[in-house]
Image 1 (cartoon, rainbow, N blue to C red):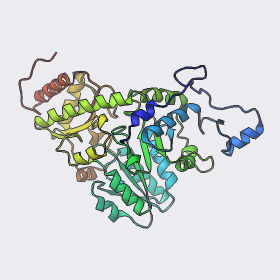
Image 2: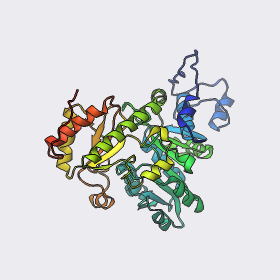
Image 3: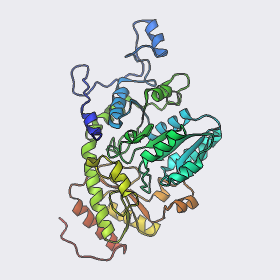
Image 4: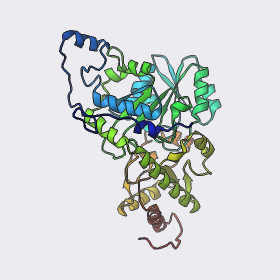
Length: 408
């Protein structure tokens, strides 16, 4: 049987303390004890069901973590104050001075900056490779390698990682495969393909309303306990705690993720096919022209589609900027970073979310000045959206004029 992540979320039921259909929010930073011994036992991690201080854990955060673990099919999960909080905590927990990381060369700019500029302070080195070429991963492994890191769908080039085969390499060399699944929640279930640790920026599709920043680490009890350890746990000591009110809000939104991802995917595929037919250089995993279309199809949970992220290349940065400004003026979306909102978001990643990557490296990986990254929204009439976007492109000379049906 195929894995059904939305069913696992659906099957979770939490009751509020007064019988509410939503669990009660724990709006406390500290918790009281009836005995000093129970406080001591809680500090030592030997008192189940007791809470000490919200930087350690809280009921609201644990509810959300349990739901995310169910979604990803892992033993447990921990939530953090941001996606970068999740990423940095995991990498610093698993690596010591002198260790080596192998990372995809196409990753979120913040992750790239952390690996390229920050971890070298601790003599932790990173080799950036083309993650789509398995031989490049094998070649980069040395005696100090501890982690293989990649994004399931890469930001911003939408390259697809072969999680099953990369996991085989990781297991062969006793390495930990850490994957960021922010771009493809529900569509891809990395743990079922062999990944050891799954990271999310909850800010994006999972929350879906661009009003909250958060992150999550899904993995084994052993790893999550290490991250939470009061003596040497990275998530504990770096203070990447999620606020309980935010955790409760994200948990509510998680329940509609399957419906939203289906609509994001439906709209994304429609626009990608139209843009490609118009002659635009379009990258979307659902297009047969995508070099990893078959790979994505073989890895995916098919009912959730190919996701809501696509890119087009209009040839130059000034054209990209003018087009995005015009689309915003026409209420087609927002010129903004991030993704997963109900409205379409668009940005030129070379000068925004990937700006931490030097220009020469951007060029080497194929990140061009004219590239626009779209996070496609939940538009009810995607045909109307396409016609209006096309009119913007015609007005700027990106596409030649073509008579379309009436826009209503």
